[in-house]
Length: 110
Figure 1: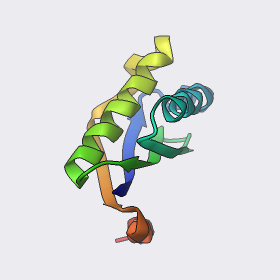
Figure 2: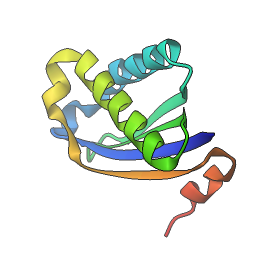
Figure 3: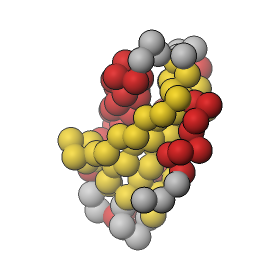
Figure 4: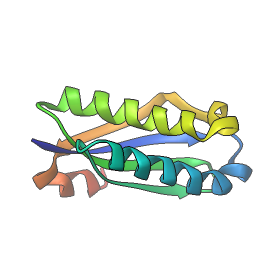
């Protein structure tokens, strides 16, 4: 089954966030090439605050497996970009998951 995942993370040192987004996206695209379970990753950010949203569709049996795969994929991508890896705050990140066919529910503001 396909699951849409949205991870909200923060880049500590917002002034430098913008320069890190390209390498992060490139690493996520490499993850997509390497794994058929990762589909259409995307990154959006508010570079004034360092708040970053990472979206990807994940093929998994259930939402817990999808979350695990999404978290591992993001952490691998952060590690792949090298020096700036320590500036990403993932321990307090927020994760949203929904069946891909109902992904619009993740876009509705609370």
